[in-house]
Image 1 (tube, rainbow, N blue to C red):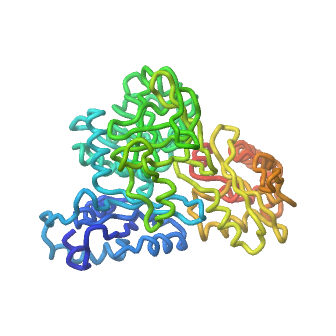
Image 2 (image 1 turned 30 degrees about the horizontal axis):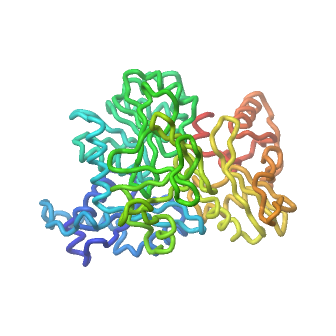
Length: 492
């Protein structure tokens, strides 16, 4: 903090980019930025250069703490005091800005102030009693807002924080056992990865004190299995970045049905129709959230802020955030989550706007038009499909290589389908419901097909076909170019 204040002319609400790999210096960087009175902007070093440059430019960071800047600090750190600097920031100043996928094709920065974070932490720690000696195992990428709970929530609650490094499920379970982890937060996709890895996973989860699951919809199958963990408090969490981490929760033990529970005490949830009238119990409407957790808005996006953060129709001077999620109140006061009312989807915990992928595809010289959807695969998990109109025959490997220059890996489609024309509805718009299943229609990878030459290769091809949900796999194919990703690797 002293280094930043001395080297740069900083003021409250200034933003500092944080572009570091996962290590103790990442946590130190977050704390140093906050103590310097500034807000941090997480930037994954593994993002494509285009996206990194865009976030740096759009956020107007005063400085970016990357490996080079960290090296400069380490050389000079003995010259600076180790005491806390004089605090300049107030509760209304920015704590962080996290970029999420944008419907315009460009990510947007969500501005979260200190008071929203503290309000959430205060409520969370009062609701769930964490004890000294507990160990929080952090697995979440720090560009995802639930990492704030893992990193800062653990430290403010007097809980030991452990940054877990293992990527494969069995290694992760062993690492958590070795580190004596008692609190864990997972997306349903990561949970599925653990549960499918081996039979010991459910036993390990049963040894935890707390298991938080959220970031995307929890499936009924996982809900049924988690209810068996009688010694672990399992919480199904819900909340968009714009309302600060989590907004509602359901404790699975004793719950009659899978819902997103009830609002946390510092927030208020409303189910509203298209005229902003309250919906009766059992009637589907848009989930709108008010209260102390609402973000300031979107960075330098006043029109979008006004569109999504609306004046509260029933409380003068307050605001509501329109989530775009559909839900309904149940008779017991719980909220049933029913999906999105627009095209935005969540894949493996990441919020993705298909429009951003479409825009990137259409920068390819051979793509005339693109429509991107999320479909449900055979194992129940969502997958991204790109439907394309081309000026020439297209190849999936070439398209994937092109997208890798513009998008993070989690936004790359699993399937590419080239069509002669898109089906249209009566309004002349693309009828997304009539787009064909990608099975059997996937683009050629532009390579020679070489079949398996022995029993081992035949067995591997069979496993790949099962995991990837496609046929005609050549022994020279690349797993990731056929739509594989880190979660599918764990099923091999």
